Image (cartoon, rainbow, N blue to C red; front, side):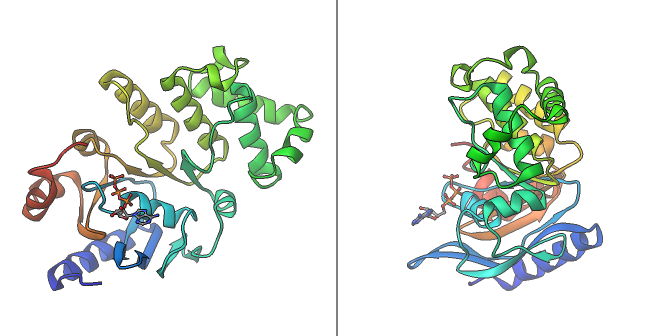
Length: 274
Ligand SMILES: Nc1ncnc2c1ncn2[C@@H]1O[C@H](COP(=O)(O)OP(=O)(O)OP(=O)(O)O)[C@@H](O)[C@H]1O
């Protein structure tokens, strides 16, 4: 537990500000313990609707675990999660997709044996007809829905993969596979998208291309991004949360985070990349 008085004050001030701008997602006292290890330490996070909100912090700070808790991949030890003021703490991953919460790259993973077109169509169908996990049912329905095919084509155009529509996903280059993952997220028509290091392993050029694509196709959604490239995060984000040892060290705009001495000392000063 153990948040300092000062960080409590900072957090409540940040939370008041963001609530005024309408929080689409809130966590209250959200915690994940592994035995004695407190991976996520009773976190109060607030994400404003429409924001590009990044979560940064050193290795092991709890970023991925926090995303896992929000997206139903792991069960919290304590605390609550609210999406559009509805308590979603106990919802499963596929139920969250129907609420409008999508996570790349775990819930909506690429199916290698299917073509690029089929992968996107499956996600489009899933959101309209049922659970993402009911693949068999969905494949039986495939082909009989003109409007779904149309939406699929539109998404492929948006992500720039229309020319690769008929090739198996397993034959895509690494960068194009990432684009397909974004297309699959897009197909679920999300209000909130959580991205865990979408540009990991990419060259600088590909990284920028992918981020531009994310910004472009997800312009209407709220985005929560976990990313190690601090420079990129500073350029992109409306808000940044810095996690350190499972706790929120700071919350603020890129300028506020860059000027925060505590963040400098704990993270930015020494460690800016993996
Ligand atoms: N399944 C698990 N069992 C035990 N400990 C775990 C488990 N998953 C994560 N942890 C621990 O929880 C802490 C937070 O891990 P997490 O992966 O969330 O951090 P992170 O900030 O995403 O790190 P990175 O930047 O390296 O991906 C770490 O100490 C990690 O070792």
